[in-house]
Image (cartoon, rainbow over all chains, first blue to last red; front, side, top):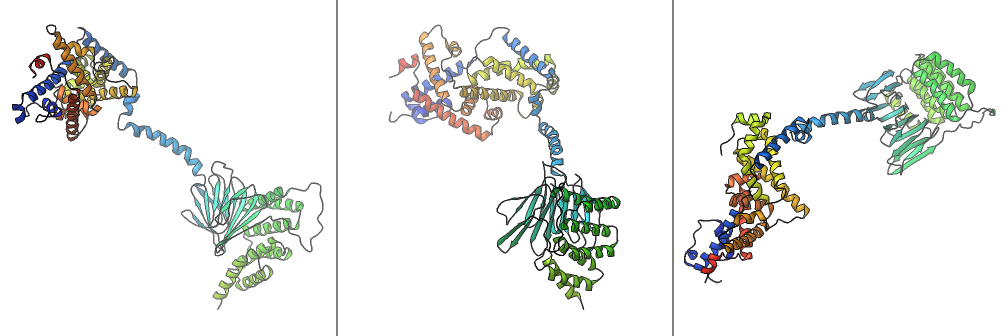
Length: 400
Length: 195
């Protein structure tokens, strides 16, 4: 077909009438081919008429359509049409969002609101600073959880049931909430708890976090811990980071033997350790709540049930705390010193001596210095060694 | 065709059955013809027609007079036809090329040879048309068979004018190539004249 137009070109010309072509005007064969294509397209146009209908078919079809629409509109809400409106999705999303917040809020915000029960800490936004020389602060969360911050403690109560401890020691009485357990976080460790009594302390500068459990079970995680550790009643865990080497030590605070300890009387109805601990904490909770008469009654009862020297020492400390809480500072100081001398080989003795240091610090620096020296001499590897060293250095720097 | 007045449309939206019926009656032929050309003769043509008419009444409140009412109705036809063609494709149904309704329009009682030739031409055209994509085929049918302007085709298909022009260009090209490949048979009158 050399010298003739390509069939596809001719077909295109057939589709676009009016397009002139010099060859086409001279070539009969191409004209015939073009006519063929045009005839085919005309045939298609002619054939594309819909078939005839019965005389009343259109009227019936129209009436059916009108009735169907009227019935659909009268049958109530057309869900599909409703969701085609631009505002429909927004309107539908509002109740869903409200429901989601209603479900999520109480789970995520158990510790949102808090109120001060006792003490006079400096509260800014959510950060709580307990004065080093003042009384301990007790905070109650909205879910009933109570947090006691010892003097010199700085902690923060965050949303989502989180407490962050910057320094010092917090003791917690946690209300059971399995769906969103409370979490206490320090730089070294994170302690997750469901419902228990425990304390977390952190010495600023030493980078050590100590966790002690009085009741229940807590889970401790930390950067220096290869895996999370669970602590039961009476157990404590020190999580520290010394350089790149993590230092983890676990100790169960069993009653320490004492040189001049009296022979232990074996009684058939010995109270389990967990029960005994809990009772002492009950006395403490009454003291913190300001119910001193009740605390005194419980304290006397506990004294009768004391099983060991450690129990007695703990009760003596509680009594000293009670004196401090009632404003009898000098008597409290004397009580602490008595405990420190009577139970010097126990950890309660060490704690009482350091408490006496803190009570002496504001008014009697000389005495505080002397007590600090005694503490460092008596407990060279004690819990408060670093803190005592720092305090002594600070006192020396201040002295003329 | 005379455009419906705002008052008429308001009554249609309000659910005045008489006005709704009158409006559909005006466009009944257009809807039927357009659907027939877009989807061909099929058993579900009546259903599609019913769907379009119901959709016109339901969506009357959305009509904006930026294009003619007929073009707007045409866009509903295109939408419904497109869905029907896609469903057919999903079901694996091929578009029939020898539909009896097409033949009926071509019957020439005086010249049976002409009828046969026309039927063959129609088959070739149908096959050529089936080689186009759905969008190209719709644009081609609306422009070439229905004679709508490019603007109207673009409005009906909900596409840009440039896109519509490209679809027409490639559609025509593909159609012409397919038609040429079919070797369209000459009508009897032309066959006698051929050298």
